[in-house]
Length: 307
Image (cartoon, rainbow, N blue to C red):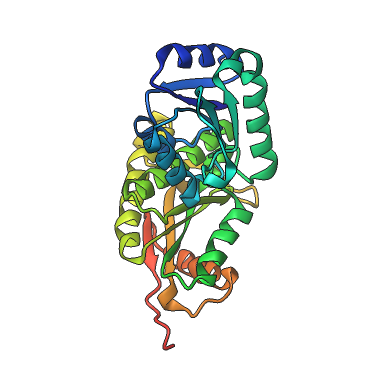
C-alpha cells in the first residue's frame, strides 16, 4: 500500500486528514518535519502532507532543505495552508501543491491522489525500493561532472541473487531487493551528507554517490549490514548447510553460496570524466573486480588522473 506521511502539530487536523486518506493509503502522523526525517530516510514515502502556518519559517526551511537534497527532490509535498498564509511561488517554497485548511474535507482526497499520480508519471522511481531509476541516476552524475564537483560513485551488485530468486520465488527475492535498497539508503543518509544520492539501476544493481572521503567508511558499513541480515532470508535448513541447491542458466543443478554484495568505487580523481558513461564504466570495472572475491567486499579505483 502506498504511504503518506502527515505532518502537523494539530492532532485534530492530522486525524481528520488521516480519516480521509486511510482507506487507500498507509498513513503515519508526525508533529513536525524534524520528527518525520528518520521515517523519510528509512523508506521514501509516496507523499508528504505538511501543515504550514504563517510565522513558521522553520517548517519552510526544512521543506526547502528536504526538496533540495538530490535523493528527495522527487518527493511530492502537499501543503495545508492555515488562514492568513499566502503562498507565492516566487518566494521559493518548494511544494508541489497546496490546499486551504477549510477545504480539506472537500478536496484532500482528490488532491492527494493527484499529487501521487502526477509524481508517478513524471518521476522515474523504482516501484520496489522507491529509489530513483536510470534517467535520474544519469542526470545526477552528469550534472555533478558539468559543475566540476569532486565526488565518488559506487556501483553495488548482489551476487548469487538469481539462484536465490529461482529457489525461493519472486516474493522473497523482492524483499531482498527492498532491504538492500534500505540498507544502502540508511547508511548513506546516516552521514547526513547534503549532496549524497542513492539510486536503483534495476534488478539487483544499485548506485550511491558521496564525498570521496566518506565513500569507504559508508561502503564498509553497507557490506557489514548486508552480510548480517541476508542469512535471515534463507530457510533454517539452508542456513545450517551454508549454501542452497538451485539451477544455473543452463538448467544444471548446482550448489550456490549465500548472496553477497560486490561494490565497485571510482571518483573524479580517477578521471578526467566528461560523460556519465565514462564514470559508470570505471565503477563497473571495479565492481567486476570485486566479484572475483568470494565474500562481500568493495574495491576502490586507485588510478589517478595526471591532468
